[in-house]
Amino acid sequence: MDMQEKITHDPQNEKELIATKDFIDLAPAMVDKNLATLKEVYNHLLMLERFSYMYKEMEIESFWYMKVWPMRIQVCIQDGRNMIGEKNELFGARLENEKDSFLKQITSF
Image (tube, rainbow, N blue to C red; front, side, top):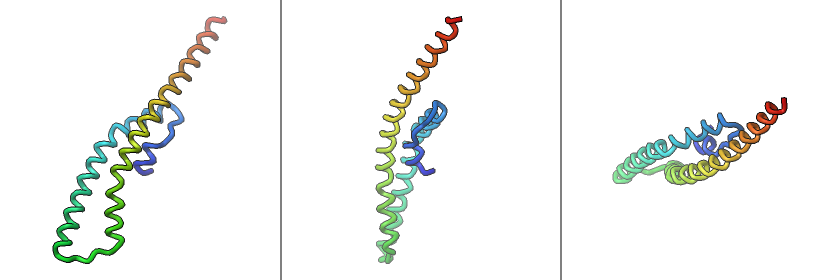
């Protein structure tokens, strides 16, 4: 499962919600690390260009494709945080209903 899939995964229970939240909390540091790597790749490409190195078209496409990913991940992080808020409310409401139901069961005896 890649980073985007982990962030946008729809948690089905509280355990998955916590795991998704924890992953989203770590994601900005991973994006920063990827940005640093991307900058290093860019510097290497500039150096090779100064020596008139002929790139393969696929190498250039791959670089520009990589350049878009940090922005896409940041959008996913924001979407993931919004989804976590919604799921947190949903799971909280379900927990309240279960608590009320349990309380009614106990008091009916």
